[in-house]
Length: 343
Image (cartoon, rainbow, N blue to C red):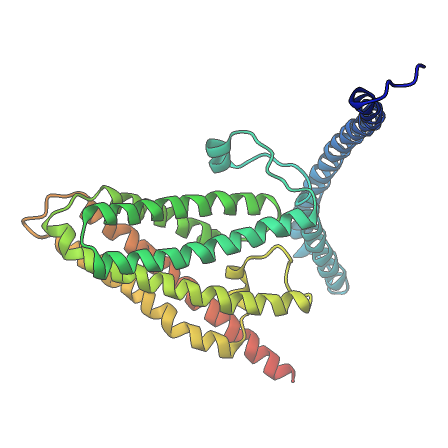
């Protein structure tokens, strides 16, 4: 091989030779990557199939155990109960395993994203996405407080109101998508929490289409004031729940992919009693909004269909939030009493 000529051309040729060597290394690394990726895909399919077969057999075993449990002799009841507990524990282990395996998207994600795999394969990626979700809620809550305050006290324009309602629609739609992705990645989000955001999306969409008029102006200030208060309560919930969830994770009592809303069920009684008045006041404000809208719908001058269509979601939100909070309080109070009895 001839030595490179002197000058700038020689420098370029030497750089090219170094790049060639690096490129060959990159090609080999990429070849190994593709082989490992094919192996990973095969392992994922094998693991998914094995878990599916195991879960099916566990269901059959649980059904058989349930049928024969009533006819068991007294000495075998303890063994049957132990087997039932082991089956439940195995099902929980499968839930954790499936969090790291690709799965088909649900109906909502399929409609929004198509058949795209949204399963994150590493703990770091899952935690990063969860933390981004939590920060997204916090930042948008602050923005919503500022915009609702501006619309309520500084600007009285249907354009700014529409901008605020459009932001609400986008916010709740984004939450439903992100929560569906988190569920696919093993996060134990409560069903009502997700449904609550679907209802809020519908409500915000109807508010967006409500034309300016007498009925709208009668309800406008009440709705904006409620939006400010609701964002304020969400701000309080985020900090109190995240602090509680952090302690529970440190103690190993909570799944690491749980969200701040789930930590509320394990919130210390002192923090819960601080938060409860704000929660109940906001829920009864939802009921007041629903009653106000139903009253406006009976007004002879009311011509807009949006009045009734906003009242129904407010009533549904009140019922769902109120009874969910009561159930949480009952569980917490029961667990506290149970703990005191043990002591």
